[in-house]
Amino acid sequence: MNSISPKELEAAAQKLPTSPRIFGKLSELMRDPNTELADITELVNADSALTASVLRLSNSAMFSMGMSVDTLDVAIDRIGFRELFRLVGIAAAAEVFTEDSRCYDVSASQLWENSLCCGIAMETLARKTGMDEQEAYTLGLLRNMGKMIIDHCAREKDDSPIYNKTSALPLLDWEANNFGITNATVSGFILETWNFSKETTHTIQYQYEPDKAPQSRPLINLLNLANGLASRIGRGLAGEDLYWSDWEKRLPRTGLSAEEFESVEEEIETEFKRVLSAFQ
Image (cartoon, rainbow, N blue to C red):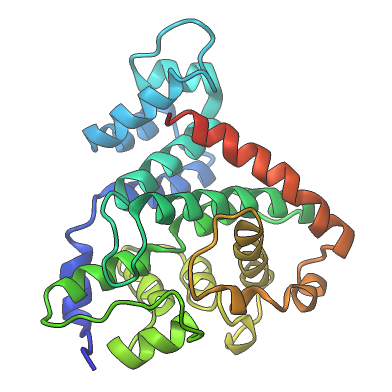
């Protein structure tokens, strides 16, 4: 087993872009009624690559009104705070998933598209249930962080394992057998060190197996359902479908009916394709 230590995880996390941390801080600012426009622009402008991505998206056909946007102030005036938050999240996830994952045998675009689809699914389901849409969207976008960090650590080791997509081995079992840790645990650990909320870290840690969570929270079950919807739409990841199979069991814990759950699939797919088109 190529066990990965907390020190190795922290070192690998430092190699990731700063954009996820900025996205997390932006979420905090958006909840503070005393936040001003200058606070938001100062935070996002701290990452020039992130700012450039957000402005490019603001000028895409999805948001453009025929007039060019060249500053965040103008972008916010044009699309509003809520849409800016969504764009920062999309751009942050795109910055994280820029390299193919060798040990998971998955491309960067597959990881990013899964994260994007899960973020949109979470936001949509949260709207249906009256849960916090902003928090839900954040959870969906960041759910795969641990995979990138494990992959970075695995590259430093000789003879690092590669997940066999044709095997029937559930992903968490493969991770535990080969690294002594799972991607969900890594995501929670890193996000906690980055001062994300307990709600966020706890939900991501137990997204695969909500019944094992020490505290049952609706958002954990909602994330499990969102992951399953991403798979239905064709944006799932190998080794994970088993964890989304008990979707009917999750519904009472979120307030969703079976009819509501079944009906949102097309809505999520339409929105996913709309957002994806802005990058093409």
